[in-house]
Length: 393
Figure 1: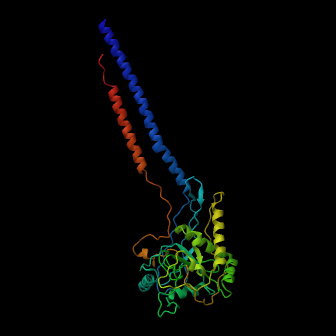
Figure 2: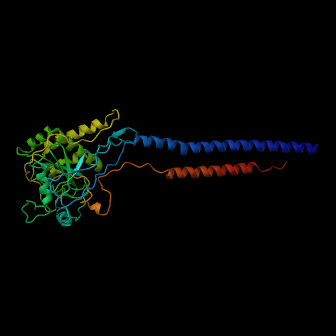
Figure 3: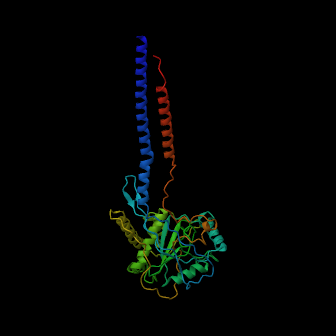
């Protein structure tokens, strides 16, 4: 009788152990399934969505052009690679699109001579005016100018010649130079790299990109800017270039100014006490240009069907070939590998903003998830081992 009872108790213990093992296996399978789904399946799905959303983003980088001292303004200009496709909109924390990144406009590389001697002159100028001997530009401002001449070649030749500035100071070097010239037909020429200081605006050359627009300007600033706005191709190129520079360097619209308003800039600094005496792009004209920028920003931020927005292409009538008058300190750059301080060391052009790269598989939070999964499996194994121990009858 006692043997029979012992056999029944052992059989009951075995059934209990089997049930506990089955329950443990079900719990372990559930934990593993949940962890696999949460840490592997969901991230994979999200990664595919991100890949599709950013499939059109391409980091455009201008083709380097050899900078030399003897480049002729009448020679055939080498064109930079075509504008990149429109990047994906930047998303806010709520998931709503904030602003569409403007496409890089078509830019023709036409570097001026800016060799070692001119760089030394720029460093000395920066030390006198700003208290540092750096020639590296960290853009915070965009300054608009017009050339006071009828064609881009005249302005280019003046900037390339490194003629002493007409400031009343003997042998005042370096000469004036700008980063961009925009012709009447809308063609954008880049003269300096984006990370190199030029001399175009007193008090702001350490923080400002300069843009020269071809315009005779014989009737004063208001009439000159009115003429510029009547040339749609030139105006569209100027707006496209400024918006691209704003996006690349996070420059607010209030810091897109004119040479005539530079003395009132919050970044103005000149240790020798000089002030700008130019009137090109006065306060009223700058407000009109800023209004156009805000209108374009608002149009891009408004909900609309996704579509490809090509960069503006140069169009319109060819500009006259008469010699241009002397432009003043002003213009803005796109990266040129030859004259850029970063180019000599192989550093990336600061004006270039590459598309965000998708993170690799073993990100920190995925590694943490894998560790939790391993701990869970060890705990389940220990539980099953304990449940599998034979019990005394």
